[in-house]
Image (cartoon, rainbow, N blue to C red; front, side, top):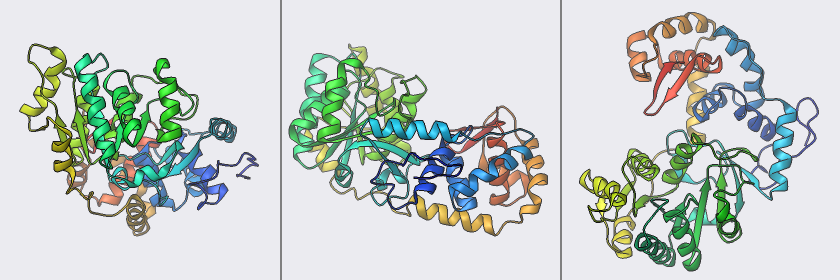
Length: 384
């Protein structure tokens, strides 16, 4: 492929095939640029129609927020694409027909994933199984048995390839059918190291997904974002064993916020590793004790109604086109004056500013690209 400025390394073929090589390259470069997250990426594509035009507009947008801006270098993107190809992986873009529909409906769905394996498993109903890393022997066996039975029943089992419950879920699913592993590192990094063989099996017999670029080591901040993908892929999330305030409970909370089923296996109140599951049940999660319980609960779930992300981009683009671009600077000042370091809902900013939603979103976009805005869960924003 040849990108702007002479990029010569092509995007690995497959799900990028529907895009021109130049646009695919530009999309990767846009997402890897400073202060560009999934929401900002989506808004930029909606505003400018294509990544190449959005890249060209970034310096001006940041300048309106009083900052200089430099997008990710072409050399960096070329190196990433080469590493992706070397790992035997490919790119999956948000508007590909193979992009999982349930994930597309989740808040902040990743615009670009790298993958190894068979995308066909995305077409099957999925259930996430998560739990403690230091799980008890009984819980590990239970997770393996649940995963095996669900896989045999036609479900794809989704988990995070962590120690304990995650690893058991993948192993059980591989013995009975299909599984998806979502990792917090780059597609070429095996973590934990003792799961290198299991991760290779997931990639060869199921599907391995990563949001981070190749070569990225798993950092603490990557795991919550990994968890949102696990929850977003599945019709329901089953927690087998978890301590309070664990990552598994984050996954369960995210699943609940997405309108998915949350299930938990009860445990002894004498074991701290059961307290998280018991708490979930107390708070409204469905108590399950068998594979049949899960199948019965999820059998009627047909996904979330509504448009795909690509349709959302078209709607956003229409909104931007109706907006008077000459009024951007005054709006930015108005919206910035309403912001503090305390998170506030975007809807509240729209109400207090008296401006239209596109005006406020554009102002927030400029502030974020300029490094002055931070986005929080639940559609809230604050000044950095």
